[in-house]
Length: 115
Image (cartoon, rainbow, N blue to C red; front, side, top):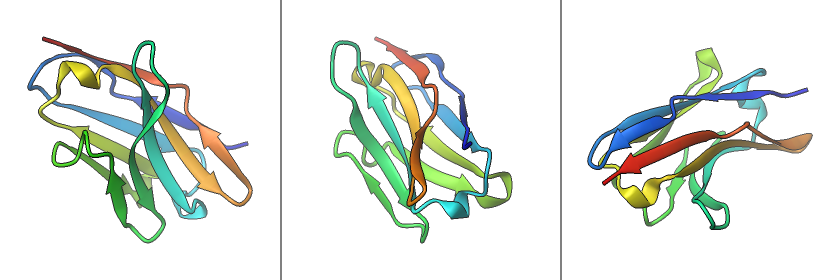
């Protein structure tokens, strides 16, 4: 059983920063890709950022230049550094991992950005 444990969410003022962490129970080299999704209140879940096994990254246009996805392979952890936060970034953020043996999701962590 793969577990993804998220942390780092909370309340922040507009223009501030947060760093989300996603700790995996297995080596993250096992995954083809890991990603962060978010679901704003009353809206559908959307992809925020992706990092592949090879280290390539992809970002939603709405966060490009403000958010950075990275990883610490020794700690089996993926991060999402969020800078210059905006109220529209308010959402539940989910960690996701993808592999041939299955796709897995974290429990979600709330990020609230006040104006």
